[in-house]
Structures are given as C-alpha cells and as structure tokens.
Length: 219
Ligand SMILES: CC(C)(COP(=O)(O)OP(=O)(O)OC[C@H]1O[C@@H](n2cnc3c(N)ncnc32)[C@H](O)[C@@H]1OP(=O)(O)O)[C@@H](O)C(=O)NCCC(=O)NCCS
Image (tube, rainbow, N blue to C red; front, side, top):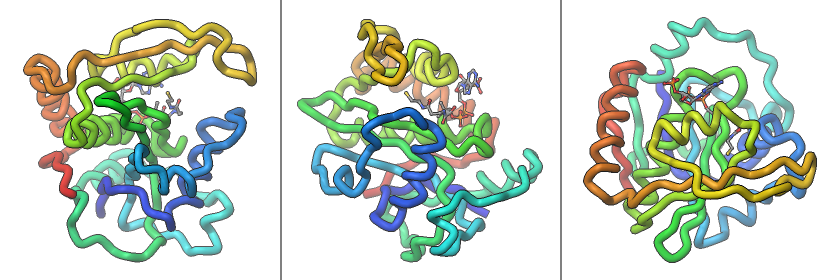
C-alpha cells in the first residue's frame, strides 16, 4: 500500500466534495472546490490510499465498503509515503481518505477545512494532514495559523490543541445552521524554535505510532 499526501487536483473534486458533505452536512452554501482550486490564496492537500481505486462512476456515489481491520489498514496506510513533486499516478482514480485546505493572506494561514472520511477516522490521518498543512504553510511564508471551529467540536479542538493552537477568541452565533459559537484558535509563530521543536516531537511520536519514515513536502 500507500497513503500519501499531495496537492489537490481538479479530478479530486468529486471525492473531496463527498467527504466535505459527510463531514459538514449542514454547511451552507457548500464550498465550491472548483473555485477554490483557481484561488491563488487557497492551498488544498489530499491524503490518498493508493491501493484503493475508485471507478469514475463510483466517485459520485459514496462507496459501500466493509470497515477494514484496523491493524492491516494501518499497515497498508502507512507502509510508505509519497510526497509532493514525486511522480504520482496521473489517474483521477486514487481513493481520497481526507483533505485539508487553508488560505494565506499577509503571512497568516487560515485553515478553511480539514476532514477525514468517517470510516478512516482515529487512524492518524487528520494529524497527518495537519502536519502537512503546517509544513506547507511554513514553506509559503506564513507566520501564524488560525481557524474557526464549532464550540461543540471537541475532536477537532483536541487535534488543534495537540499541535499548539490556543483559543484566541469566540465568535458568538457564528454558524448559521444552529447559531453555534465559533472558537477562534491560533498558533504562536510557526517559524519559532519552540513551535518547530514541538512539531518535531509530534512528528516523531506520530511516526512511531503509525510507522511513517519521514514527512517532507516537495514542490
Ligand atoms: C477532526 C478530524 C479531522 C480528526 O481526524 P482523525 O483522522 O480522526 O484524527 P487523528 O486520528 O489524526 O487524531 C489526532 C488527534 O485528534 C484528536 N481527536 C481526533 N478524534 C478525536 C475524538 N473523537 N475525540 C477526541 N479527540 C480526538 C486527538 O487529539 C487525536 O490525538 P490522539 O490520537 O493523541 O488522541 C475528524 O474527526 C473529522 O474529519 N471530523 C469532521 C470534520 C471536522 O470537524 N473538521 C474540523 C473542522 S474545524
């Protein structure tokens, strides 16, 4: 196998939209990923399972799949990594497990989305995507990363806290569907020695847990 993270492509849009709908069913208006790919401020990455293939006709409809055994799944997922810039299959049939995106404006990266297919959660993929997003934002000269997260979304908040995000504020009644508050979270300077040291420790722990040899963003 293979799980690898690469930049999002046009042919990924159907699967990314499917994951988005599963993760954020009440989000309205829905994100237009066609437009996001043309937006020079926006940067999106996807985590793909290279062994799992998706026929074009299947992309529109969610796949009915048996939940895989966790151990073999994890072995398959993290047997090796492929990185941006390497020769990757051109086909749009790679099975996408999760994605993340951010906008960069004047040195600030704002995470717009991070989502993992329900079947694949709690297997380190959200963390993998966040690591790659932080590394990519750093390479793109961002100094801090911010985001908004639902007050009730403790899973995502826990992920962000782990990576050094802290609460920077609250937007009351921010979400239109249920008037839920948004917690604004922000990092310290991501280029600082303490932040990078913490990130390095987290990568090592993640690598030990999931068997990833190295994390590297190539252009
Ligand atoms: C948030 C999300 C991306 C996490 O992805 P994931 O692949 O399941 O997360 P990981 O397995 O990499 O977990 C990494 C860390 O996230 C936190 N976490 C993830 N799921 C959690 C849960 N259900 N409860 C508590 N903490 C959780 C933990 O801190 C975990 O670290 P640990 O393993 O040391 O405890 C995923 O739950 C998701 O797609 N949710 C729906 C979309 C969403 O809410 N996105 C955030 C929008 S701001």
